[in-house]
Image 1 (cartoon, rainbow, N blue to C red):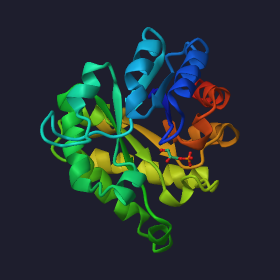
Image 2 (tube, rainbow, N blue to C red; image 1 turned 90 degrees about the vertical axis):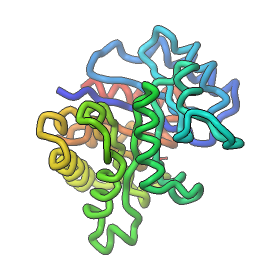
Image 3 (tube, rainbow, N blue to C red; image 1 turned 30 degrees about the vertical axis):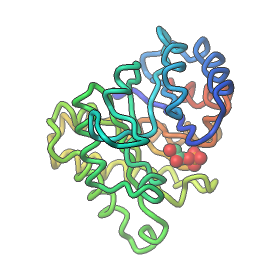
Image 4 (cartoon, protein in one colour; image 1 turned 180 degrees about the vertical axis):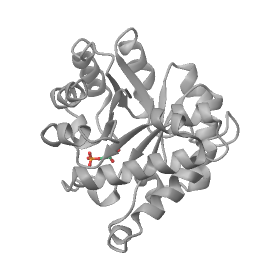
Length: 252
Ligand code: 13P
């Protein structure tokens, strides 16, 4: 059975003291279960401190983005080598906000997935359609293209380790959640696409999260679906209590 992965994406929220306090609150309370993994996706300046605070606990720390080069003249960027060096384990790639506001493309996402694996980081690759695309029945095609491009050139073993987060853009921060059946249909399609590119056995290993207005009240229903293996959560991950409830739901 695939384990559930609950990741809290703080986006550009919290000051340093709040970030540390959050982690101090959750480390001792995260359920001691092999069925679920908890990840906090935090702003760059907090990562080293959070890694230290979560050391030896069940909580993992992720960056929300990175550059694909190991080092060089890229003012203002953070490299995979730097993230690995301070003990970060995961990195969110291709979030729709990065695609929309920071010119992230399928091509740069692909370079970044390779860079992540080359440096021992696990990528959480985000895909998802706009409302216009959904209304034009383009969801499946769009998501298929994004997934295929993101994993292009990876080994089967790397694909198996990739976490895919299906986040319909119209459901992000809007309070509108995709129905669990609709979300599951897209997640199942993503698994089929991965199957086509690799094999049944590899595709069955891939953790596929849903994201978009996930909260304690709807998470169990979403996680009960056949192809939804976790959640990437924005707003409802900002409070420790709420985050813990989401992680708890993953143990069931
Ligand atoms: P919300 O949970 O706030 O809708 O955000 C989802 C998201 O974008 C997580 O990456």
